[in-house]
Image (cartoon, rainbow, N blue to C red; front, side, top):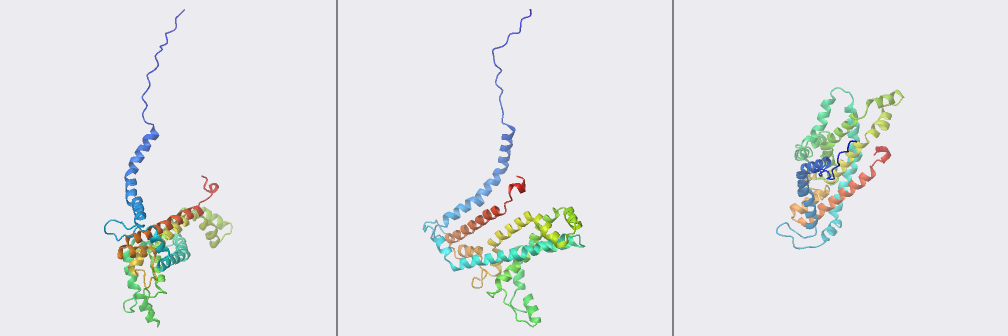
Length: 314
């Protein structure tokens, strides 16, 4: 009878385990993200906290901030008539943008998106203003809106038609309209390009099937095109509102918030006190209020436009 081999009582030596693949991938991703996170902290997060700190001081920007006044800057801001006027002007720009600029951009995107001859040229022409800098745009429209009929293009047309020249940038009843016209010319092509991108993602078979079922062009637009452009519309509205809240360069160069604060915005109000009057504590408080308004709008907007799980499939 053959004897069984002896079983060794010694256990196998433990194998040295290395890092899992998931951990290694996490380390690599973290190393790639680290430079961006450092820059984001230095140029975004840190300035926000410093602004919150300086907003509680009566600080002129020279030397250390030592005169702490608590929330007195915020109390002064919310009771300032000029700041309330700036908020009203921003709301007017937002309403005009959502009511006129974006619908016109949608309609034009639908027209240009069709298979029309020369549509590429039209796309380039309408998008070209967005490529120009805001400084160049402001200077160009200042020349167009010049009150002198011999120098201003629009007033020269009015005079030739037998009308009186209009002080586009000097009349408190007209200046905000002139600013909105400039903003529309500048950003109209950007929103149109967004809608063109969204239209390209809509399958043509859907509209063709609806047409075969008897739907006309208007029914196709309102019941098929617009619903399928939902995500693009949300993005366009979101960017339009935030851009209106932060609008500064065009307004400051063209009117500096005047005349008599008729075109004042929150950004020009902040710049006036922070960098013109050297009230950096007060200007920091205005910046924090603008930041809070943007955050509140973003949270509410994301909440209202969030699609239910049964629609997203998540």
